[in-house]
Image 1: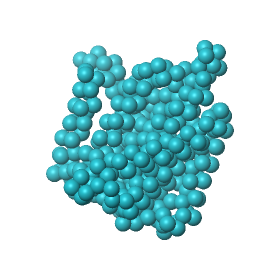
Image 2: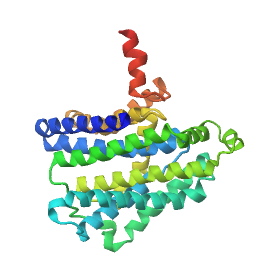
Image 3: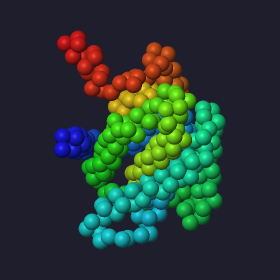
Image 4: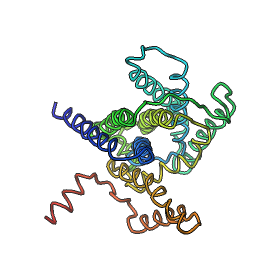
Length: 323
């Protein structure tokens, strides 16, 4: 019961934050907030593979695309509930989109996760591109034209609350997994795969489990993205989207849940915050400054902003000690 209080309090805190954003920000900033939530979900899911299990995946955009297209198609064509409880449809189809992405993660992970390092990265990158090219040739999903007229959530507050539900579920699911026997298995694979195998741990099975759970939440992130933008296109899920997620994990700290959340917010906000600079100079310097900022952070903080610590650890180590 004590553990159940934490997700509930976190959700209530996010609801209060969403209400403040709803009354205090215009539509442009509200859309950026929603993209931050999508990126948080994406980064937390990838952190399970790259941070906790020590693997290197570059195909997360493919799983995101599966969830996005399934949820978009299902909500457009399949009305299984009356309009009064339509919000449950969004949840059900997001769940199904995540399950479909998890199934794809299992099919890809089972043969490919026997590989290591660069070979695994190349395989996952190839899978992401296979998904994107397949979507380009599916006319019933819009093909290269994209899929338009996707129903939205109606209001920013409802969109924020719906996304917050999944943020809390993702955070505390991964948190509980990493503090369980399975989580110790993931960490043992990251620290020394050979030693883990010598102790009787099936490292391939551990990596596949991490891959499946990570793929599920990536599919849910894709579902949210589709309903927030009301339009998706195969070009929305390119290799650069996967790289963006990797940047968030590395920048926040490999193995730090709160670190990747902070990094996801920074990576989403920084290019938009630099947009007025283009109007002043007449030259688009956003990507140059953005890239330079990332390089400087990696030089000054090679383990990421939080390293392997959480926000509570940073508070105890620096704030309370200085006080």
